[in-house]
Every structure is written in C-alpha cells, then in structure tokens.
Image (cartoon, rainbow, N blue to C red):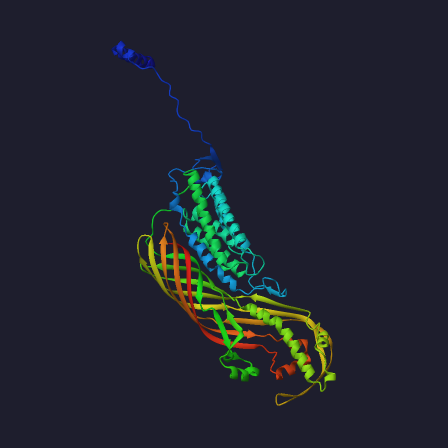
Length: 597
C-alpha cells in the first residue's frame, strides 16, 4: 500500500511539470546526437606479479615495458631535436694533426726493414692481444646497456644508423690514408702503420658510448669508454705495432668520424628516434677526473763514458787513460716519448684544490740497431783474433796456416746466431700528488696550474743474444808471468761438443727516484660535465742509470782453451758494467678528456 501511494505522488508531480512546459520549448529542442569516443590503439602489456597473485598492466612508455620490447624509431615526448653545430666539438682535428706533424720521427728508427739480417728479431717482453678485443669495448657496452632496457640517447634505428655511418666514415679515412701513406710499422712487418686502425675503431666506440650514455646518463660512462680507448692505443705502441703518431691520428679520426656520423643522423632523422637529451646545467666546481695522452720532449739520450765504468778491474787502466771519452757503442738515443696519464683533483672552492696524477712515459730506443749490428760483427772479429793468435805462435812460415784453411776449420763454430730485442722501451711509471690551482676566465674557459711531488720507477731496456755451434778445442801451451803472456803454442784445432747458449747482451735501467712536476692547462667546458683540456707539463727527476754490456760471452764457450789468453790480451769475456747519474728534464704537451664532479 505504501509503494502504491509513493508511485502516485511521483507521477502527479511529473504531470504537473509537463503541463508547465509550452509547445514552443519542444519545438526549439535540438535533435539527439550520438558521439563516438576517440580511441587510440594501444598494446596491452601485462606481466604476472607472483607476489600479488595477479596480472599487472603496464603503460607502454614506462621503463618497465621497455625492458620487454624492442622498438625501432620510438621518440619520447619533450625530447628536443639536436642541432648539428651544438654537438660537434672538432677536437678530433687537432689530435689527428698532432699525429701527422710528428710522424717523421719514425724515420730515424734503425730497424732492419729489408730483412738483411734474418737472425734479428724484435720480440718485446710486452706482448698482448688484449688490444684486439678492447677496441670493441664501446659498442659492446652501448649495446649491452640498451638490451638491458637502459635508455640512452637514441632508439635502435637511429643508433644503428649513427653507428653505421660513424664506422663507415672511419674505415674510409683510415684505409684511404694507410695505403696511400705506406708508412712502415715499428716491427717492420708491413707498410700500413699510419694511422692506427685499432685506435680509430676504439675511439669510435668510445665516442658512441659518450654520446649515448655519457652525455645523457652519467659522465663516468665517458670516462670508461675513453679510458679503454686510450689503453688500446698505448698497447698498440708497446706491442711495437704502431708509433705514437699512428695512435694520435687514429684517435683523432675515430672522434671525428663519430661526430660526423651523429651529425648526419641529426640532419636525416631530426627529432625521430630520440629518447633522451643531454644532461643540463653547468657546475662551477672545477673538481675533475681526466684521461690524457701527450708527447714528452727533453732528455733523449743517455751516454756512458769510461769514467762511468764500475766493477771491472781489467778495464780500470784503460778507463783512467780514456776518461771522459764517450763509448759510441753504449750511447743510447731515444725517440720522442709517449705519455699517458690518469689525473684528478678535488677543489675546495673555485680556485684551490688537491689531487694527484699517474703517468706512464715510454721512450723507444732508436739506436738499438747499432747493438744488433755490432753483435753480428763480434763473431767475425773474434775469429780474426783467434787466427792472429794462432799464427803468432808459429816460428816459421811453413807452420803457419792460411786464412782459407783456418776458416774451413772454424766453419761450424757458429751455426746459428740470433739477436732478440726483448724490450726496446725505457718506460717510466710515476705517481704524484700536490696542490692544484684554477683561475676561471669565463663560464666555459679556465686556466689551471699545479705543483706536484712523487716517485718514479723505470722498466729496463733489454737485448738478448743466442748462439749455437760447435766448440773448437786445440792443444795449447800457455805461460804467463806477472800478468803478461810469455809463451804460447797452439796446434791441432779439432771439434768438441755442440753448444747452445743464451745471455743478456745488453740491459739498461734506472733506479726509483723522487720526481717533481708543474704545468699549465687551458680547460674548455663544452657540456654540463664534460671538458677538453690542453696542457704543458714540466717534470724533473735525478736518476742513476745502470748499463750492463756483455758482447763477448760466447768466446769462452766457443774456444775455452783461449779464455786465459783473452784476459791477458785485453779481451775480457766478463761483461762491462756502467753507472751514471743523470738529471732528467721532460716537457710534455698533450690533451685530456675530463669530467667534472
């Protein structure tokens, strides 16, 4: 009953309202329209959350989704297109030019390129194939990060296009120059040394990593990329596969090629395929970490005189007589040194900070060919001496042996001789700490200086010799009175046992010492956390160099019956040892890639 009354009341009210509405109102009403909602096609991304026990839907633009999909030319909103000139630094041009300027340095290297002496080998202690793999570090890390869903600058399509153009430009430049310049490698293996392809490849990958993740995510990606690229170039030098000029030019080509490749992508694709822009904001704090490469000029020869002779009493009288006369065959000359640094400093304010530097300086000996040539003549000189001694013991011409007959008797005294250069570098490792000063010139430019002190250690230069042959014995009667030969009779030269000997022909090194350094730098901050620096450093140290020269050890093995005669006649089979104190001055000019923090 209550429901019936309520229905009647509501119906009466509706009829009264309708009665108040005029016919005109109904005539002015617009017809009803059906509106279709706009629909945007979207893929439904869902993952099963085992913790919640249900399926979770994800938005397509979220980072979680990107881990489960691979898009080709996706563009994130609010990413501005790159302008070509904003992204070109042109730093590769002066780096390439520096390598081109100093490449004439290799002309003074006395390597046996024409293989006149097949028994000469350059086989350094430093031999590694790691550089064959580190050249691909940059692209490997870039692709790995992207496969892991970590967004960088570009989507896959734009990244691959930029990489293809970068490597294509690099390959064209490197191979075009290599086979036009025809520069011989340090080891004499082929005439395609300049520029270094490994280094160029490595710096293309490093610059890609820098652009994709260093500029957009963290500057330490750039440090890692350029650090490994620099190490690759250094290994090419230490492996005797390239000169420093090859490495510098290769690095310049690698940087230039990548910048051009990315610039072409900016022109072709404009704003398509971009996921992130560069980090914004400029830090006024000059604290930095830098990786540097340069050339060191200064002390390039270490000459030894007879006054530097130590530990050999046989030559003392001769040393006293000759005094300051330089021994031509123990004077070491070096090429311009290669210098590689890792350096960093923390600044308390804009002007004053503390920091340190690790430096590796490698000097290639350009006169070790003199020692090789001398070693190859030692055997001939030795046989002539034995012949003279042999004939000097004969009382009449009928007993003397002709040189032809003597050579036939001694023909197999040496059947194989080999001179092996185990290390043709004198390498210095130094660690310094000290005060760093900075003077801001503008928002982007600053002058810097430093005052450092530290320690340096040296890796030695080393040449080995190996001889094989037949021992020559003879009947001998030798009399010596008060250190002088009074009677000598030799006869019946005959074959003994076979011998196979190896010894240190020459080695030279330096002691650990204190080193002092200073320098001036000009820094250009071209991005929020990234800088290029050019610098000129001065380093000083006082080192004691030791040299052991042992060219005659083979004599006491080939003809043991004459060992005593050699000593008496002033031909000792013991090595010569020299010690010399020298003040070392180096002026290093180079460039750095640096990040601020």
